[in-house]
Image (cartoon, rainbow, N blue to C red; front, side):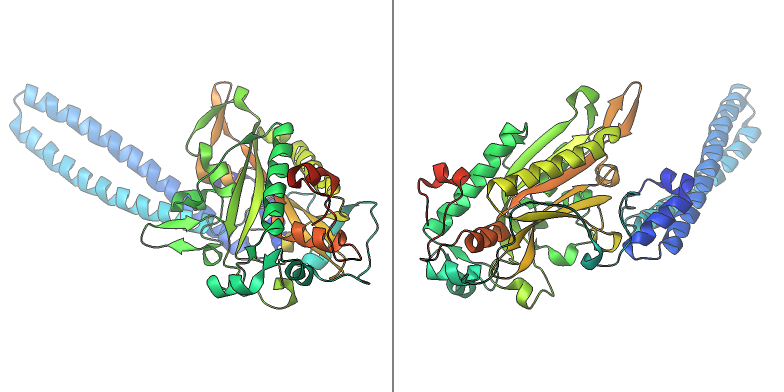
Length: 422
């Protein structure tokens, strides 16, 4: 959520930045400022009337001390009228504050100045590409065929048991999942991240804090009886770990990581982009989160991007990194890099990680601040997939398949699987 003070002092800059997300933000921004102006006016009036009420109380006490009952009764009548007025003003203030928050939660995070213009993924900017060759599709089976042929993944029985997008990983396929998760966690620990095992269901305040609600409500699985949401990513519980707290500056930066299954309804998804492992309703992912001082967040974003690129490179995959244009960014992000692995059989890039800086958008919602001198400030929050497994597995199967049908295991995974081929 955008701080209202920032909206008031940087109105033109924010409207210009939000236009990059392919929306017309001016009406909402102007409405928010109007509600805030009304809120401030009501607060001033309330403050004055409460001061008057205190003054009347003192006058009543004085009148009673002087045994002037007539004056005391008159003052009591004025006091009751003032109390009624204050009660009405408090109700009006609550209504205006609710309207202001309703507008603020509909405003996305303004993109950083370095975010390019553009409406779709076609206008994202490639900022890095690995030197590994982009293998051709010749002689390569798509991952869904080779996975079923080698008995690694059973899509049909997964669909029978749960529905499309819920595959079974079988034998070496299950072990590959476990090996990747452990490899990613081990690498994160080496990089200074504290491993956590987060809850897989969260409450409404938690989903709101990181921006999933109300923006992605339709994409989340919900358990009505308990009023809990299945997490779409470990970002949600990990980032909320310090919600409603004031951190000491010496605690920063905070680096957290965690494995979780992720649950996404992916409503409206169809076609070739959802074939096999391309888009699932349940998948595994290791997430990294950082909570940092504002002045360091963009330096940290670049470091996180390079870290994620290093993971893909260690898996011996061709990859590239793109800077998302404004129109392709998420509601909550100020700047996002996508790391994409090459799929030889499909001849297309597969997103395997998004690394984002949210600046104060999440911390303002979560009321997460740090103590700086005698005052407190909002922290900046960042996160990244490190990594999401389904498309990594797809790229691995298609890149490392051998002419005899076996799958070569990248060197970094061999100690975990205790074998060189699947």
